Image (cartoon, rainbow, N blue to C red; front, side):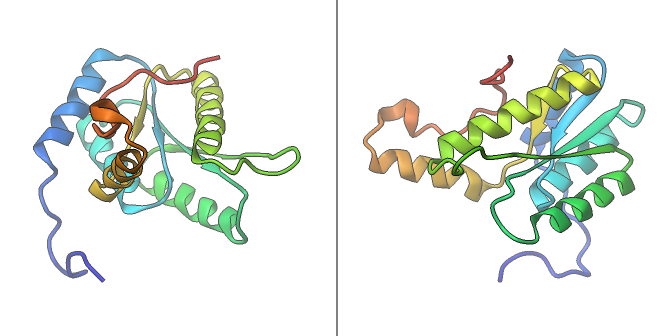
Length: 166
């Protein structure tokens, strides 16, 4: 198991992350939507966003995939943590008519459709997502195996337009 000792003081936020978040907050107005999984990456991003914009409305959006037992309870716990950090929390659940998609791309598209629907409801024009270095590494490795070229191996951009907005 890796990570800091539970009693260790928190480390300073990554300066690149802090700068990217400041740019996002400066470039947008109104509520900020934040994709929340309940993992350390998205909770840290929420805490950082709350610290950077204490008076800005932040809505944490949790999208459950409904693919495993216990996911609803996990979403409820994550929503409670978001509220503890001063954000509104919305829990959505994907429904799968027929069978769930077998591809990551299909699940990702459904998740982004759900994010954009919730963003419209709360009036947000920006969605912040937190990813760890491992989150970046996995798609790069998969794309390298698929010989996708330099663009496919670039990883996720720090800032990008939403792939779905309909």
